[in-house]
Length: 158
Image (tube, rainbow, N blue to C red; front, side, top):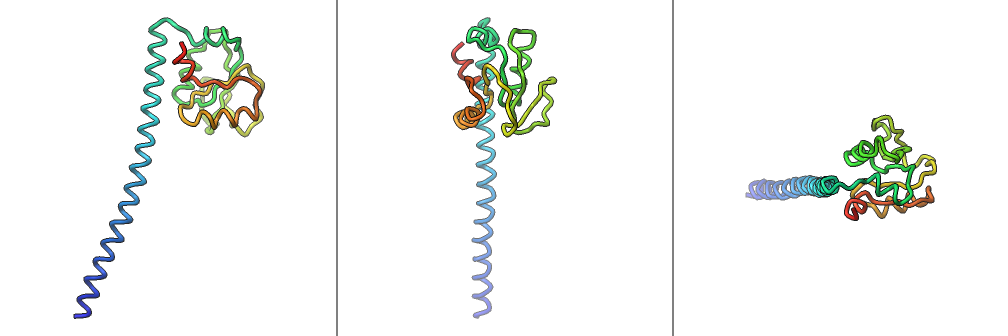
């Protein structure tokens, strides 16, 4: 009888512990996927606004020129950063370098450096990263004395 109770108790404890472990793993994956979904939704909305700006005949290069920015750096050379580099080709705005955690990115011949590197003087830094702008701005402000502006803010001002 005791042996049977011990076996049943062991099965119940194993089931409960197994369920908790599986639940935690699933929860972590769900949180990670939800974070990625939020990030990609924000990127989609940014690119959608960019398309609206272009459809209205407005130009990021003209905006930057009006602000007096000629030599800029781009923080974040993923999808939005690479698109910005292409948008500014053959304009009066010169992308001097990109800043990214991944310095192995090939962004059309633009040098990509880490935030830990010494950063060359520029007229402005355009941050394409959608999330954590305030933290990024704070870190860049320690290294550079120029305006640090969000691509998202620019697009919604145009």
